[in-house]
Every structure is written in structure tokens, then in C-alpha cells.
Amino acid sequence: MQDFATRTEPHRRELLAHCYRMLGSVHEAEDLVQETLVRAWKAWAGYDPARASVRTWLYRIATNACLTALEGRARRPLPSGLGGPSDDPGAPLTPSLEIPWLQPFPDARLDDPGLRLARRGTLRLALLAAMQTLPPKQRAVLILRDVLEFSAAEVAGFLDTTPAAVNSALQRARAGLGGLSADEVPEPDDSAVEAVLDRYVRAFERADVTGLVELLTDDVVMEMPPVPLWFRGRDDYGRFLERLFGMRGPDWRMTRTAANGLPALVAYCRDDAGVFRLHTLQVFTVRDGQVAHNVVFADPGVLALFDLPATQPAARASDGRP
Image (cartoon, rainbow, N blue to C red):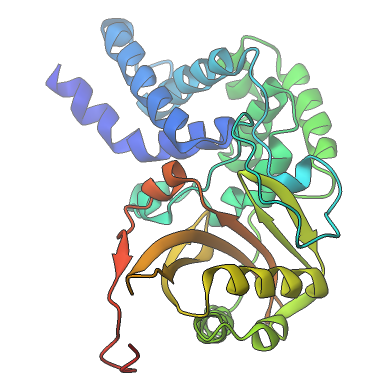
């Protein structure tokens, strides 16, 4: 079976991205990739390269494994998909652990030349949250056609249906996205995004609410799964930050990472012993030089996906802070 491993292993990471788009969970996507490879290994003796490439064959197996896994399951939302924004930044921060929240995807897992079709724009959290509202087969058709660019005939073969039915499902799926597109989106100028994030880090580490609010769009959104609350607008964002710094203190450290093709920051809060401990992962959308969306993740299971250090040094050589 050495030939099987040689032929299938190069596709593992892109299959992980595919299963993640379908399921909205990195943990479940990893399980489904493993199941896909087990199914493929069992069927390897009957694989016919004249009918399909190994990649196409694996995508068919993975897609159907995902559809089976999704039967009877609730969608994975973000808080903004469950109702209107809160107007009370002082509301209790009670997590709703019974909700299967949408998880972020570490960009480090996509750092592979073989993932040219795993375009960054197609992993945006807002797009994935919208995809979660689609029926599973419509979601599969949208991903296979608009993201992975399989033909209608190929997708029909995956799903045991007709090209006409695939095209009809694709039209309904696109309409169901509410204006969001699975096409590649232009990437913002990297230097402009870097500048905004650098300013955000400096202001956050000083607990400078005024400086942070200056970096926000008027209609900025902040949401914090597994807490079902979310806020819209600079005023409520700023009031929530005042509450956060009042509860946790003004001493913070931030480091950089990336998730879902977006810039992200990891926040560390100083405890009573003077140790900066891991607090949250914050995934940003930057638009026209301002922060338009911040999804803040505090679930330990989500943070573990990013292999983050549990603590940061109490002082930096560059700034000499205690």
C-alpha cells in the first residue's frame, strides 16, 4: 500500500480545508479527513485512474463523508447569526456551551504549495458563517463549484445527481449567501493592514480605549463565541473595552498570528502574580485602513488549535516594562 500513501498524502491538507468549509469545525474536519483516507484505502484496489484523478476521487469520498456527518446536526454559527446586536456592553458574559460554534482555522495549516485552490478569501469567517445557513447539499455544491472549480458534470458524479440539478442548487446557494461571494476577494494592501494592526497592538497594550476606538469603522462588529453577545458600532465596542480593562487591568501583551486568511492577534493578560497568561485569539477584518470586524475566541479548545504559548514574558527587552 506504499503507492496509496504516496498518491494520497499530498492531498491531505486541501482535504482538511474542504472538510472545514463543510463542517465549520477544525476538530471534526480532521476526523473526516481521516475517515476519508480510511475509506479510500479500503477501496484502493478498485480505484480506476481512467475514470478520475486521485484528487477528484478523494474529493468525492470526502464530500460524501461530510454530508453523512452533517445529517441531523445543527449549523455552526457566530453570535451575529443568532439575533440582533446587544446594546448593553455590561451584560453578563455567560458562555453558551451547548451551541456548536464556528471555529477559526489556523493559517499555518494551509502553508503548502499544493493548496493553490484553497484561496484565502474563501475561508473568511463571515462567508463560512453564511455557508452554514445553507442546506448541506447546497453548501457542498457551492464549495465544489465556486471554490474548487469542479465542473457541473464532476459535481453531479460526486452527488449522484444531474448537472442540471447541480446548476439549480448552485443558483439557490448563491442566493442564500445574502450578497457574500465565494469568489476570491482582493487582498487589502499588506502594509496598510500591518500598520493598522501595529497601532491596535500598541493601543491595546496601553489599555488606550480612545486610541483603539479611533481605529474602528463606524459600523464595526465585535463578537465573542462562546458568549452569544455581539456588539455593533464604535461606542459599544469602546464601552466594552472599558469594561474589559476595568475587570482585567491595564497590563497586556499581544502577539501576531493569522486565521482564515485574516490577520489575528493573541492577547495575554497580566495576573496577580505578574505573569501574562493567554486570554483570547482575536481575528480581524480590516477595511479601508480601519478595523471592521473582530471575532474574539476564548474557548480553550479553540486556542489549542493554534499551539499558542500559555504565557508571555513579564517584560520585553525593547521596552523594559515590568
